[in-house]
Image (tube, rainbow, N blue to C red; front, top):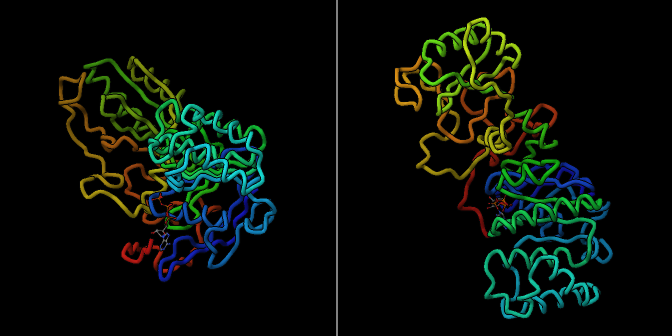
Amino acid sequence: MIEAVGLTKRYGAKTAVYNLSFQVRPGAVTGFLGPNGSGKSTTMRMMLGLDRPTSGHVTIGGHPFRSLPNAPRQVGALLDAKAVHGGRSARNHLLSLAQLAGIPAARVDEVLGVVGLHDVARKRSKGFSLGMGQRLGIAAALLGDPQVLLFDEPVNGLDPEGILWVRNLMKMLASEGRTVFVSSHLMSEMALTADHLIVIGRGQLLSDMSVKDFISANSADFARVRIADGAQEQREKLTASLTEAGGQVMSEPDGALRITGLRLPRISDLAHESDVRLWELSPHQASLEEAYMRMTQGAVDYRSTVDQKAGLQQPVHGGYGQQPGYGAPQPPVPEMPQQGWYAPPPPGQNPYAGAPASPVAAAPAAQAAPAAAPADLTKRETSEDAR
Ligand SMILES: Nc1ncnc2c1ncn2[C@@H]1O[C@H](COP(=O)(O)OP(=O)(O)OP(=O)(O)O)[C@@H](O)[C@H]1O
């Protein structure tokens, strides 16, 4: 198990990590998420004794990394796949690591096989592609057959087959009872790989819960309703009836209706009572990406100025004449923001409201970051970064 308690790291005036406390348990894949610059790598470096906390501490199996006896056999990590002597072959690179840790040479060939690099094992790593470099980094992490594994962006640069392989590898390692802690920006991948999530923003804990709970806490389940193409009158009737019954109705880009606040049987009853024939009535849960975007948008430091729709938009009320399948103007059903990640808010929140003002405000009460955050956590001053 990995345990962080009050972990804080300052670089001069910059607070990279602030008062982080969490546990990473064995037997599960724990995803470590957060926007660029939120402190994930700094946290992992502190776990591995590569950076010293300003305050607080982090232990692995109850010990700080630096006092673990024969650490490479207990903890394997991939932090930076490029940290390899390019003039060495993959095999020699692993052999030198194995020698330092007292690991038999036979294990090197074993892990080369596991990561699929046996055919290029004697080639110099400087000629390796990004994905091959990642595989070599993963091989190094597996070398000591450790119980605890840390991976910083392990699928970076991997092709679809490689991504699938990493996914299965992580799950297999966890199913063997190991502690697997993995950072990634690929939400769709995390949704398939992780059991549990630790989410940080600007160095502070935003969330520590299962993937399922995370999605439920940061978005509402919704129903999708589709009625016959061109059935304009029916659409209006149904929208009015659903709204009257307390539902929130939004129009999806293809003309389907997205409904929150009403359960499926109720929607079905209301459609029946309104004499509206449905082509689709289906339950949906928001994706991890949608829930993540909703939770972290207040903690994003680096955002393109080209993105005119940063944050949740006030829905546009108005015509839908150009929507496919609808020749006539459509009723004034609010449109969903035209971003792929729009998620309805959790129950009880106004679906038309903007983004939460801060990551602290967005965090569930039990997981909220400390109220008294240092001043520089609310403002990113990139010029101070001395990396
Ligand atoms: N050695 C350092 N000196 C000064 N500032 C640093 C140092 N290392 C990290 N930082 C700063 O601390 C903050 C957190 O950085 P970190 O690399 O941990 O974030 P991250 O979540 O891993 O980001 P990314 O997702 O982009 O990899 C950033 O503002 C970064 O510039």
